[in-house]
Image (cartoon, rainbow, N blue to C red; front, side):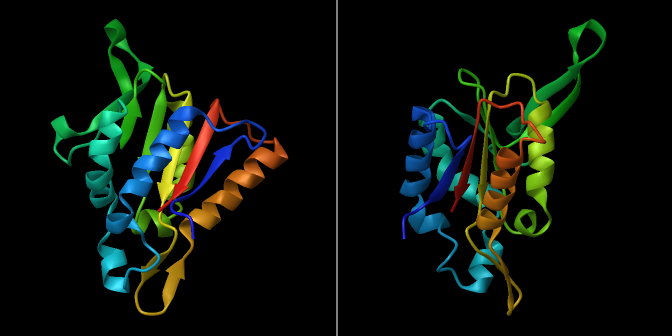
Length: 181
């Protein structure tokens, strides 16, 4: 199987060079983040912070600013609205951003795979100023408990396929990259 699985939208546009570079960064972290062969306990322990830790060096080398932790000064906040004196009045936290290219990145794992986080990510990322592209990374397979699992990447790929095929909901991005790890 190819790793990672990925899809670029809209489907009638050639993937941008930056997308291929980011896919290569994820591929280089395969031994640490590949979710399909992991036993249940290891898959459940793979958090978005853990995935970002393995991706951070490669992403930073490509020019991304990547969340470093949960402390206020380690988070990345992007403006949505401005208020008095031009100060940001509404901001959202994201996992990574490439200022020069306008690429907003969200990484989901575990609870995000189970809790429909992709819907929240689509809406919130759509509201970010300067976000020209969206990247959403999800586990290929998330296991929880002994008998339950969800195919997070495939479920979200089906969602983006529907969004782009129906044309009823127009996303404000020049492109969307979905990556399954």
